[in-house]
Length: 462
Ligand code: GLU
Image (cartoon, rainbow, N blue to C red):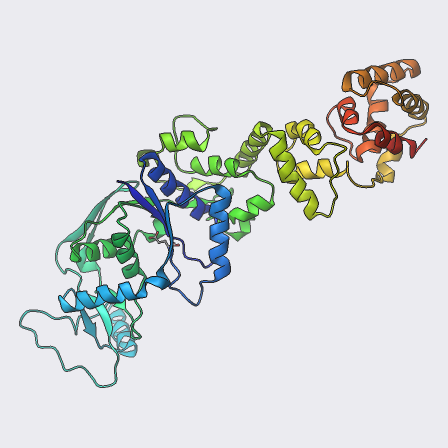
């Protein structure tokens, strides 16, 4: 049974890199019919906030990355960590170290001065035949893991390939601080062990933690999970993705009018590929997904591609769904959406030409507000030759059959009668009706309006 987990630290929003990690972990579990566990790593109490927890849950929810177990909170598992620390002390896998932080600092300075790598000198590490000094009074100890001194720790990373570190490179890791609180790398191991995680898929900023964690797993007599470290995501400009790149929070994409399926499809291709396939559903993705096709090199963000996918998924989306999503945005802008004109018909016409839901809301909004077209724009297009044609057209509009083809025939008849080219009449019509110079074909736009409203907008200048 495959078991994966997503283990964010709630110190900020769910960012794009985190969302991709979550997506890959989720898809791997789904592909194998396994379980996907959500774990909140909130032991950094100074930086973890309930708002950030909520932001992560909201982001996961919006993307539809549903978990099978959890969320588990590390802060609620402290007793369990203490229990394991107690067992490790009792069995000699860990030991109390009374070296004070000040002494440690002096030790490191001296090592640096000698050109050595700063490290703990092992003064309190029990060894066969070694007599330890008596514990100093009044110094609370830390607990250290007795890391093997010899040999190597090696794993076959499912993205990066074989990795090997000499144990001599690794210090005896502090697993409990002076105040008794367990440390990060230790909690992760106990959790992954207790939660029976088979595959750890995470960012490669954690690759340095992996050898330490594997050693603890082994000491506990547990089989370490397999590891897959994902390379980082670079911005459009090739720099490390950061706030400078604008929308790095997943919920910012929601705000900016992206559909979750577009973001998911986009993230799926960020470092993973299935031939040349670019557009696919999450069902298809879960069917295809494997760790073997993740590239070990950094992935580069491409906003144009995301926009292209978003436009695609908006065109694919049903009009009722789009009307619901756009309606919420209009409501948030304080625009009252009425039954006529039909928002569903509006989004159905405009969705072919926009890239995000905010643009769709901009297009739809003008149908529901008291519109005053920009005077300059109007003056530019409502020329003296256009006025009489417009007046004829408005008169004809009173009893034309209310559908695009009949309206189109009326437009043609008016421009013919007045010897005008199409844009001469279509442009002022567009501007009077919508305030916008760029719209879908003007007969189709007109047909969206209730007849009375269309006549009212045209009569403003007649
Ligand atoms: N909590 C860590 C983070 O948010 C992830 C740890 C892990 O996946 O092992 O970066």
